[in-house]
Length: 110
Image (cartoon, rainbow, N blue to C red; front, side):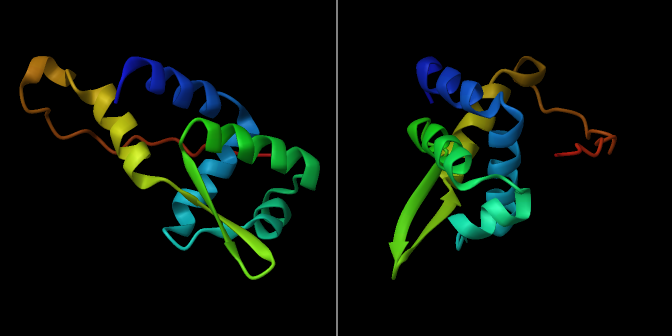
């Protein structure tokens, strides 16, 4: 992943609602979710949801597909993996990283 694309992805994710949407879509897997389900689960109004989904799509982090009269959104796992790979490319000076302790904090979303 190039630096410009990385910046675009990080910029898109640097907003609470968009980060919550992206995490929900990652959790949903390749099948994704329809826009209505995303909005209902996160309590985001349709116009606001549309704006945020467009930002994520413009950054290349989500894909949309029409199915009947619904639009389904899914995380672009290739883009996500590319972003993580870019961020960790020079981790530990190129040496294997030691196992990380499981100290994940629960991120609360509104």
